[in-house]
Amino acid sequence: MTSRQRIHKTLAHREPDRVPYDLGGIGPSGISLGAYGRVVKYLSLNEAPQIGDISSRRAKPSEDFLRRVGVDTRPLGYGAQSTWSLKLKEDEDSTFFTDEWGIGHKMPKAKGHNYYISFHPLVGVATENLARYPWPDPTDPKRLDGVEQRAAAYRSETDPALILGGSLSQGFLQFAAQLEGYESFFMNLVLDPRRVEWLLDKLLELKLAFYSFALERLKGWVDIISETDDLGHQHSQWLSPEMFRKFAKPRYTRLFLPLKKKFGVKILFHSCGSVYPFIPDIIEMGADILNPLQLSAAGMGDTRKMKKEFGDSLTFWGGGVDVQQTLPNASPQEVEEEVKKRIEDLAPGGGFVFAATQAIQSDTPPENLAAMWKALQRYGIYPSG
Image (cartoon, rainbow, N blue to C red):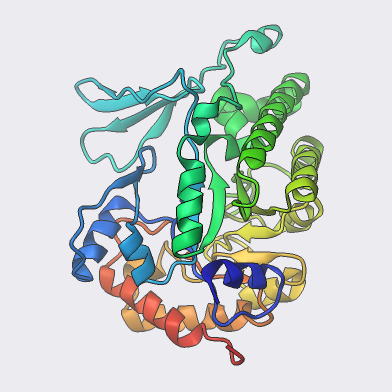
């Protein structure tokens, strides 16, 4: 069974030969540069770690590494428009850049682990002037430079499941807040809903244009598209379910359902934190996959309950082991025990892709990653496989 067949079988809620594994198929399932550097040394792999995502400082795992640990996915990342290029600048204290949307990113030179958003370009732009903002071109052909070639190479060599994601995959609420400024955006949900509606409709227009363009070009290559919208934090939610249903859910439905019907892709919806109240809405708007189950967030840790309630409708992607406490702080034996429990809870009947709850952090010992992989290989085999 190839990796792609394995993923498709579990997405159909049937048991493949083993539980599929994702590391880096989407950004939130990746691994930090520091942790990757230590684990490739631990595994005696002769390679220099490369940066895959500059903002988050996540690594770009090598093909040798991905095959070594049995990863079933590969990302089909796409680029920026042709009028933009990365220009890193620095001052005395920081390194910074502006992305193609006009959002500023900055990282402190002293003890900086990743870039944070330092400038929100729509601050001070009047609602009547939003249409004249220099929005990026979603159909610039340069975005897909080399993507078809990478997809063909993957399919002919290892046949993984291919996931399309990038800047235009950032979710409506999260991305709008990055453009507007978080305080302004969330206040405007109440104080200026007309402005919020205009901005979200503009993002929907750009997303529909991009996905239609990209999936026509990549027809037959893409298995999954990912959308990322963080609705929860550790203890609660960023907004009420009522607000989500008013502003975001209808637009996701208008995005997801036509793409699924026309192109046959599966939809992965990433939303970390305490998102339990939103799960029925996520299902209704057309998502096939929920990433992750953030085990340490409020209401998210009972994986057996999650499987019983939603396992017939959603594939759970992630939730295999906690990155906040278990991976960095537990013993290898404790890591193995948690992996075993999550597989027992989530894997029966298919509908589970193993991944950590979030990107693997820099303070993760390589011994614990080795224990995670060993446990997945030991407990992730289906009886009929």
